[in-house]
Length: 218
Image (cartoon, rainbow, N blue to C red; front, side):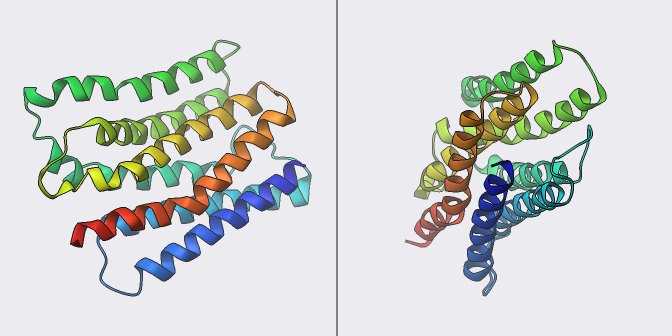
């Protein structure tokens, strides 16, 4: 069942990545959009490696495997897309947005707390590696939540991307949920639920982003 779920998720990510390449790499599109497409592609390659490991070894073994870089890379792309120029458009660092910045910390704090629960049962090399992965996911989640709740600027630049940011935040928590479920060896039912939801996210990522970006020119 783990192999079947991994194959399905890999295929869904490949479809999402393929659509992103088809839609956003035929013309001069914003780097912001392309980085998000690369995030889906990175997730796809990570899942592909996990699928191949399951096919060859029957399990994903060891404290670290290359597939983890796919997830980490995916969230590094998502983080980089929102960090910097995009964030500076809506937050000038003034006191006006201090409350928003504080509220946005809820997402990374919850994720780090989830890792803390995992670490509390014993700190190992695997726990440390998961901690690094969690930190990367948490950094991306901070900006997704921030851009969901922050006051919009002229022309609705951020408002039209809120559905995408909500989807990305959900994806971040789904990845953390997957880590916890597998680490604590919970029921396969929970694994199925998380994988099915991740499949939906992989398929919806680029279309939802596309609808928002299209409104930039309307």
